Length: 113
Image (tube, rainbow, N blue to C red):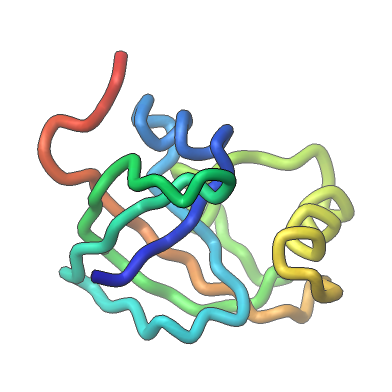
């Protein structure tokens, strides 16, 4: 089963139902709609949920739409966003960087209140 890793703080947002979109750069997993994937906490590598992929779209950071932001955490500025992803991927990220927008739904009753 394919996996996606999330920082612990983001895994909590997912389990609360506040995050159902993830953005991935330099992704070579070839994720597709309908595929079930395992979510892992980045820091511990422990599984915290399973989800099904609802939609996959590729664009550039500079072309993100309002819909692309739905279900995703916000940033104070574009610079903060680029810095965050540059740190995640250890590569320079800017408005021309390609990004894959992945919408997902948790399987079973994994949401916490």
